[in-house]
Length: 284
Length: 354
Image (cartoon, rainbow over all chains, first blue to last red):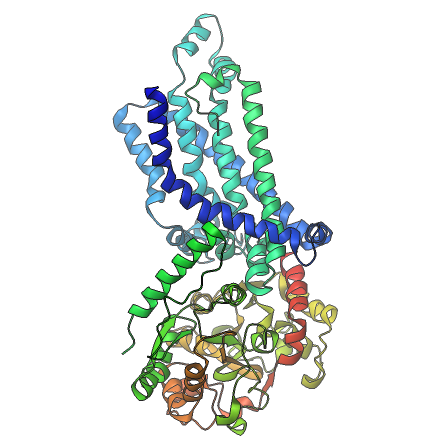
């Protein structure tokens, strides 16, 4: 009885957030999606236009490729970092966490403009590459520059879920594996790595989905040849005033995101049978 | 004085309307935020130094003269404008419209104007339209790096696209409305009066020649940055931004040959509840006095050619309204653009992002 009552109160506490989400998220998304099916005539004409337009398809594919690339690079950078964080004592761990969180405390615009300064032809990154004998690498206005900047911006979103999962892994399991004769690598590969999969999945999904919607970074650092879906939607809304067309692309992105979430959620549960007991961290 | 209170009230009203629309999906009657009696209007413009110069030259004197309360907002946003007009409750009255927007949205997003107080002879031919009166001008033109090409400067737009005669890097706007396609055609020998309908394929063939060596900018600030960092040896810039970069020490010189004469217009938002005040404001803003102060406050030209700004030599060198510069200019065909804007943007996007 009392638990049902307290649950009632909890729902009441949820109400303000729920109203905000309904009014400012669900309703606009629904309205925009609805327009993509209703205009100019009810049906799927917007979606037919979308898949038959070569540019739209190119940009969609490019967005998926860039998102995948950024996800892989952030994972490669974040995994060892999070692993070290989980090994160190509280002092060092706080310091490393501080370094990861630092970008969170500065605005995305400030960081993007910092990258413009760093990546410009006379800038320090080009200077360093020149020092290594790599002259004339185009950083600003290129896919390379966009990928570098996006990776930096999204790194915390990979490190934090990984770190979260890794702190929950019982390191005695590794000792157990060693005592059974496993090499360090084997113990890592067969024991540690699978246990860290929920973190890898959570971080990857987060970074991938955020990459899909990136707009500021490719717009400011890339040139039109690197434009991603966000910029296409901007052109459709801001220049062509084509709300239904923009809605159609948004719906496609939304569908990709939902499918991905379901697939990864299912995949993790299939791969790591015990994952569900791991503090529920895999249920993203 | 302009007060910020109406803006807050409007914002609160807008949020209220959004909440109502979101919860019950009944359109709000909207009567609450508009008081009767005192006249007021909301003018939406570009922001930053541009807006400050407009406030100083047009808005503040207008308030002083008429007592009509003007709220200035920024930036302009065609998408927001469309939503407002569709919702039937625009909170904007006067809109600073890009020149192609005027014919494109005349009658749909903009009201037809009362031109009885406007003397078309005071403005460049073809710039006064049914739904818009020009309020400022600039040129989209070549600026070249003097350190690179100073001994043998470019003398026509063809030189911009000629990487053999003028090897180096280029920069241009990422918005085709600046006139990139037209400039490519001019470079290829098309006469200014034979540009339309645009031959897309021919234009893109010319643009392809420099595409790989071109940086595309999407804002005025970016143009200045590119020149200051010398990231492009030749750049298609807005005249005012070229002047700004040179003032900041960038080693660039203007090339006026084939400059594209641009303007922005004042338009009245369709369904504006303050049409009369809006019309009064437009008549005032484009008149000689405010236009003179305007041109002296910022590196943009006056649209009203009877204005008599006093500029120093450095500013005159980049002044798009100067007769000798206008003699070398050409103009985008707004009427054609109004009808074909969607197609141009689509083709341009296909070329630049595909």
